[in-house]
Structure formats: structure tokens, C-alpha cells
Length: 139
Image 1: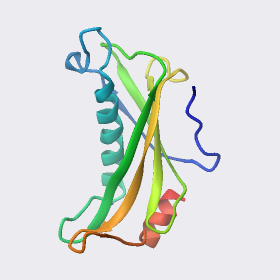
Image 2 (image 1 turned 90 degrees about the vertical axis):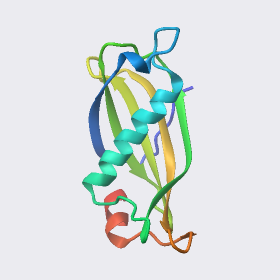
Image 3 (image 1 turned 180 degrees about the vertical axis):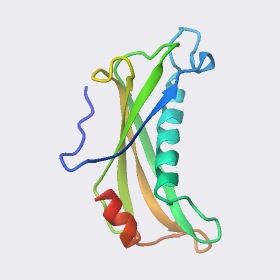
Image 4 (image 1 turned 135 degrees about the vertical axis):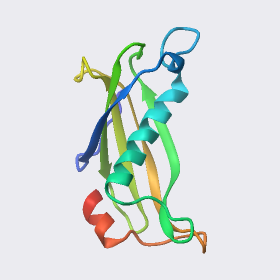
């Protein structure tokens, strides 16, 4: 089963992450949980690049759902090319999608996943409308 990205997705960020020896499991391939770390790293670096980091006394993003589909094994050594996309901005949420491929085989998707991000007022612990500037970035 292949992950179908929405037609209206927008490529917003890409990066390379080195595969570390410690990322592998006993079967000598990258452990499934590590793929979530790769997506998290890309999401956080992208959010930092657009000044959307959470401020505990203010507001910011919270991940409310995350998933990953695995297609081919990643193995050490190498680099993972992660492409991050956004789609479906709603009143308080938007979707992020990520594809992961080896940098030396960028057209072969090894895994793909995503997350639903909600914008939150942290002191009130309540979802609030996406800021206009962020809506423009993710649309």
C-alpha cells in the first residue's frame, strides 16, 4: 500500500539526516521508531525556519496524530533525504506529510508518513485559529 499525498500538498522543507549506527535494530536496518524521529527532526527544523516554535507562555503547534508507512528498509551507512509537505489548513489545524528516501536514491521512497498539527493557546490549553501568517505558509 502506497501513501497517497493530497493533490494540494505543498513542499515546504527538505533536509538530509545521517543514518547513525545506533539507529539500527538487531536485524541491521533502521528501527521503525527512528523514522518518527526523522520526521520530527524535519518538522522541528522547518518550524524553527519559519519562526513557529512553541512558546509555553503563549501559543504554538502541537502534534495530535502521527503515522508512518514503511516500504523499503533503510540501512547504515547513508543519509536520509526527507521532504516535508503541508496541506489541508483548517481553522485550527493543518497536515504535514513526509517522504523518506536514501540520498543516493532520492526517487525510491523508503517510508512516508505525516502528522496533524493543531495550533494551541498553551496557558488556556485550548485550540485557537491558525495565525494568518502561518495559514499563508501552509496553504
